[in-house]
Length: 84
Image 1: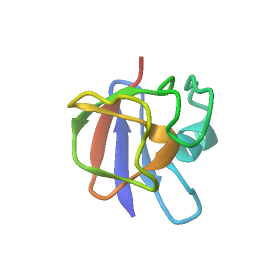
Image 2: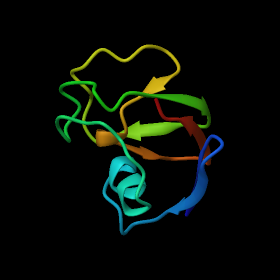
Image 3: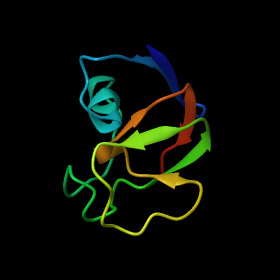
Image 4: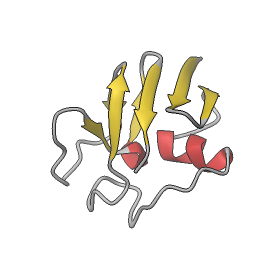
């Protein structure tokens, strides 16, 4: 399991019971804007402050350096993110 810290909000463990980072955040009742769950729109874009993620499928939405799409990513190391 890896640790996910949402800056100034919460800390959670990401395990195999969640398919994506978005699902893990939703399970903790975190409000995350999204329009899809496949990396098409970019509405769920958030800042990756530390750590690394892997994409289940490469996002089609533009993702700047230092940003991630939780709808189609999983943490591969402990991470810290900032939600908009």
